[in-house]
Image (cartoon, rainbow, N blue to C red; front, side):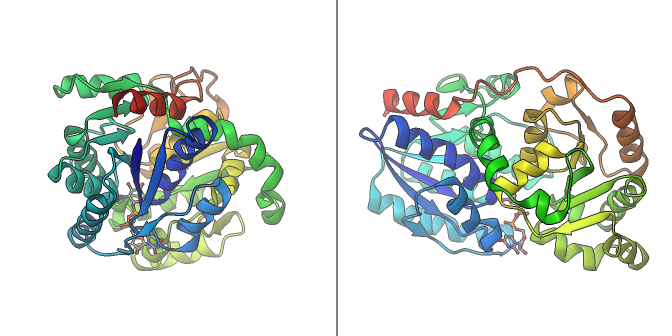
Length: 367
Ligand code: UD1
């Protein structure tokens, strides 16, 4: 079986590591994988570092789209992916998650009748203002095999009338967190380098466009973080989009207080191993990232979600995470509540750590 895997944004590179590892360890003779990087993320610390750390094969192609408007970025990727598919003639294309790279892969492949395998299928925020929501709905509805990490994702597909080729298989990110947790503790120097001690800090990430690009939301989030920093160290590995928007969208006095604050450590984007270590040793996680929400759960850390909804509703339902939106009072209040009363229940929602192997087996059956 020959597969073309399309990756482009940071979380996809990480997810792809799990499948490439399963192929290398269990299906080396049966599966040939050709990796295509769209170039959506291009900074070394958003892309190359993950290939180096996670042992992912070098992409055979890089389309090099870079940063553009959604339309231009997606269109260039479609063109590039189509050309590669016509040349490679794979049995199927493998797509991850919900980025513009996912959408472009789905459109390119479906137009020329190449079957699509969607990993992380079925997730819904039910908020179509998110570009990611449109991307995942379109991709799911073009796919032949749909692998959902959660029971809720599986149900969402059934509710939308997709009933064949769907699987509830667990989460490849959980595979990775399990596999890399101890390796990260041995290899990463981040705690020493930044002078951090276990549970002495709260880890925070912000990158969703509605938080970074809407000044009132960004200001509310950072006002809350400033309050929390009065009693606790905050560590913020910042996405490049957020670094740019702090300068533009944060009120001047707030910007000065945030950026000259010894209790707010602003770092460049972290590598995967550093991020896992930061998550594993934090007291709490505050984030608008889907992946970081889940990793907080994997490492049994309480999590505040800086959005009005989440695709991972199981982690909210079991009490391990709270939706605070970008609301200053709700963030501070939920933080105080979790500090006094941390959650205790972390049920097995994301499978057993072998999702990638299951996916490979099912793909081999089908193609
Ligand atoms: C994308 C995904 C999102 C995912 C996120 C993970 C879409 C619509 N969104 O959002 O689902 O959670 O990746 O990080 O595909 N930039 C750089 N260097 C880089 C990459 C980006 O400076 O290496 C800056 C550019 O100014 C760019 C902006 O970040 O315009 C946004 O990048 P983009 O890839 O469009 O979306 P993300 O916010 O990263």
